[in-house]
Length: 486
Ligand SMILES: Nc1ncnc2c1ncn2[C@@H]1O[C@H](COP(=O)(O)OP(=O)(O)OP(=O)(O)O)[C@@H](O)[C@H]1O
Ligand SMILES: [Mg+2]
Image 1: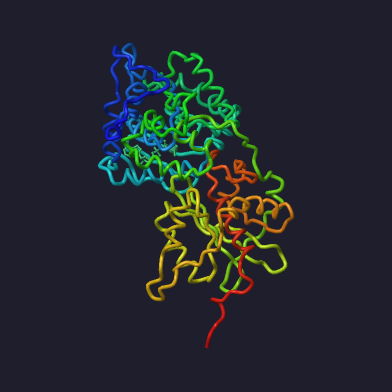
Image 2: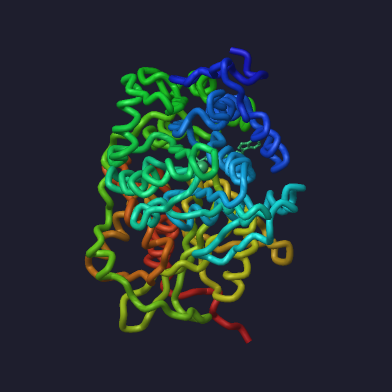
């Protein structure tokens, strides 16, 4: 196959463009370009269809979009330019971007605000509000764009003219129902009042056995149960294709040739290591039907919450590092001795990407003289390689003290952590990110052992915690670096 050109788009299903209707898509494409992300062909195709205008009413034809596509294909990106277009359609409009958690949504919002501030469009809005809990972009016409957590929003319901529900795979049926029940009844009045048909977007990669709402919805849509005003797009490899065949992945991934080239595919595959289901889901958009039960139940988690400590030099401690798939975030955790109490694991910091991590870890190491534990395989592999190969120019010694974690250790480390929690041999400090991740953190089998399943959501905080604890338990009996020579 020719890899020098992007492959032709081959969606599993795509609501066709109806040429009898005009589309507002070109304007969305323009906003996307102004925000620094000119739409790639699949994005434009979806935008052109969902932006079709009903000639009878002059407003949107569709009231719903269901979009499932591989990870990192650019689905969240299109919601942003569409939100802007939608907010500018008239005065006092309300658009919502809902991600799995409030934190995810806020992260996306911050990202969006960065490109907003750089673009000429910024003059159309007031200064963005960035305080947690009430983030928003208010336009000069009175319209508003806000981020929110789908789970939280499902509790009280949100109303508006456009609701993007992203990462739909994480919703239960009840949560999706609550979202719809809050939104749908208000749409008739909004349409009358504003003249613009409200829309709800459901966007997501395929989930796993727990994705109650999305699985059922996709199954019905695929069986042909597609409501008249629903646009449905389904990208992914054919269900019977072999996800290990990179040619197949290339041929069916709508980001191929636009967001990555063929040579990068083999590297992406390696990052997934022995997580074949995770790979099939992320790059093939194939549902993972594996076991998804959480590995640490809520009672054990609550029982092992402990008081954080302020670390100081000389205290026995070890740092652990976790990186998200795609290397978008890095977390540093620490496992710290507490005298009579069992050691405690706490999150030190979450960093954007991996680029700032070496410097941050250097500083931590300089202050606390503690080693760093990091998995040499999986998403943290590239960062681990940087740490392992950096030489201190002053001493010609390795610049980082890394614990000697072998591949065989890495696959027993998660179980050691869980056993230690069960025996109350370690505790964890209260932390929003850990508390969130523990709810979905599940096991995936690796030989006779198990690893954190990166496929059902981010687990980088759990991984950082696991590494910190393993490193702590394998600290040398005394620390050569701490012996002062006079
Ligand atoms: N049209 C585009 N032009 C340039 N870069 C793009 C475009 N669309 C997306 N990207 C980039 O590709 C990456 C993935 O995009 P995005 O986060 O929207 O994907 P996603 O499908 O939501 O991914 P995930 O499943 O991980 O949430 C981001 O770095 C984004 O900036
Ligand atoms: Mg996304």
